[in-house]
Image 1 (cartoon, helix red, strand yellow):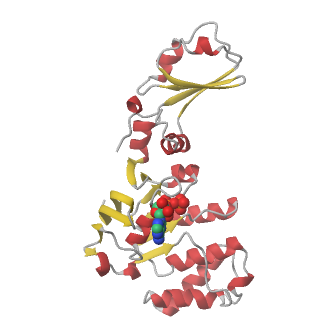
Image 2 (cartoon, rainbow, N blue to C red):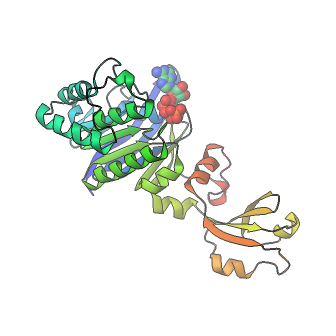
Image 3 (tube, protein in one colour):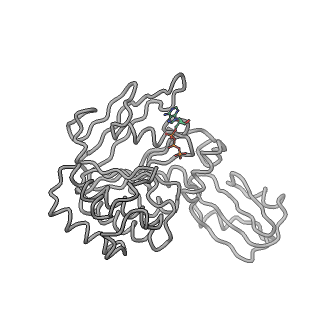
Length: 310
Ligand SMILES: Nc1ncnc2c1ncn2[C@@H]1O[C@H](COP(=O)(O)OP(=O)(O)OP(=O)(O)O)[C@@H](O)[C@H]1O
């Protein structure tokens, strides 16, 4: 797949605090790439460097064959983390203004705006002023503003925050449709279930440094060991005798056994002690949410030998 955006060796400091350390990743044509990390990890700073709002101390950003200040911003769409559009302007006027800023033909923009308003359950709102919209409605308008000029690269910083489940589904469907039409999407989100559902690849930063980079399948194979959840009253000492268990969490009658890497689940199950009390048993891959918490809290219980992977 063709590389659309290449971020290479970014270093960035604010005063004497280095907030990005050698950040490198690519976004390919027609993929959804997630940029993840705990609060303050450096996601927005990375995005601001890509958008040319900030400039790196070292490293480069290449979009197609354009670098840094030469990047054609009208080929990029951006939904910033901070929401906010001019308050006393009508929906249609602000969206046409944003299309015009990107040199997009206004007659075509008007048509697209009406289509999008319909798709986003905002039909008939084109002459309503922004201040009369709810927060979620405003977010939909801002999303339309980010995609109105048919960008080749779309950067979405926390697009789902504050949206109800129905609106989240509308956004999800539209983001997937844009990806399938060839748009490259860089998406930052704290909602791991949505990332797991939608993203093709992911990049995770912690304290300004890369900790995970790969396809969802690669990350799952590398980090997402199996866990076995057993419902039934069981003594922790009995559970501790079970082989190939990395750690155990027990809450009342529910015990979760996190298995070591490369355990074959069906073979492992055969070796459970006969006197184990099993009312229910399930075997699952550890979720991205758990991987995130494991890394963000510095536990690193799920990584090979407790080491950080980069
Ligand atoms: N303009 C600035 N001046 C000084 N420090 C800054 C500035 N912008 C960001 N930082 C610092 O850089 C670090 C990374 O911040 P950034 O906003 O990139 O994190 P983030 O991963 O987007 O976090 P969040 O999930 O909370 O949005 C933080 O320690 C933050 O305090």
